Length: 161
Image 1: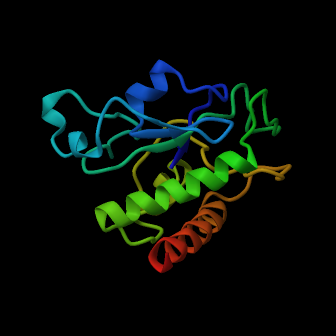
Image 2 (image 1 turned 90 degrees about the horizontal axis):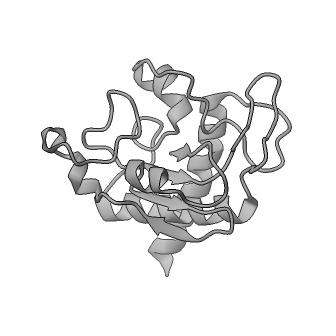
């Protein structure tokens, strides 16, 4: 799970690097590549979203956090919206169903959780450590747990309806 560090509009760069992106107003935009394209990275046509972890991974993102600063925290000119986050969590739940992914810290995680959880070094990635209404950068795993709880709620809705 990612944010683009761009505006609320989905850019061509976003489309190239993520499988699906949610704009600031909650519109879902498909990326250029399907998740299946990330099964074989030798084909040179895949969504590159996480250093050394693109193989077999689905990259989903929200178009937001342009000009955001981690320390001292500044939400930037395009902060994440609540509408965007709602749509994003539903979208992630749908991908979990489609690809049979259990919602665990090891299988559904934010880019910021990659280092502490999977021990794969990343460079300056703090997405997703801030949610709408937060005035500080949160612990990556704690914020990831909030996201996973919301995704599990969406899963229950999908499975009951």
